Length: 246
Image (cartoon, rainbow, N blue to C red; front, side, top):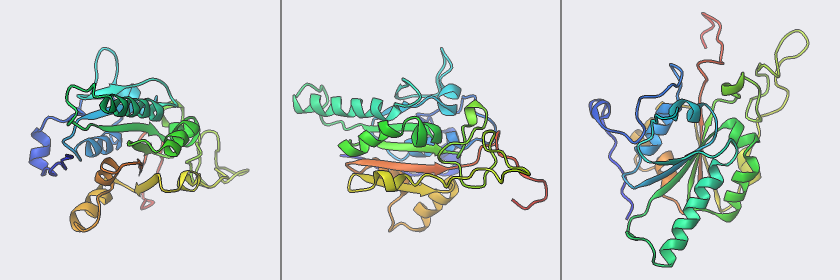
């Protein structure tokens, strides 16, 4: 039976042992760690995790150290979704054959990837997971740019944004394509897309509207693929004019 974890207050949160520890090399102000911790804290169930190549992976798994206090795997840039889908399919097969030592324990399968690994390089891999309807959750850490490799535009970059490969200036206003509408390509009964602009909004949605379903809990406790698109800024690649009010 799945168990929903009680949301801690600030004091409890600061002194608790999490499955994603604070020791990492993410940039100051990066929201990756906030989103990951909130997702993992949404349940007390066992977790099987994977991460695509990107800021999260290179900053939390610097050999021989790791920030992950849970079963975790990294293979490549494009295939965190299929890695976790394979683990989910294996668990289902072993349970059906009666070969699990603890068949009553039901782990949650969660994959993490950036917008480059989700909207571009791993697009077809994730598409297959949606088509097959794996019992898993996919979390896109969406800062709308290839932040780890130089700030190039991705298919998640919004129109008008200035990236290193779509610079704005006298000749161009920046990115000329609209952001790829992911749910349109993978929509249907096996696709559930939830988006929040920031973690504060996600918490406020949960706490002030208890009759609604919390984004991260719903993704963890549904039977088909649940996708959470966490839109965030990149503290290292975004630039704001002083006094602009942004």
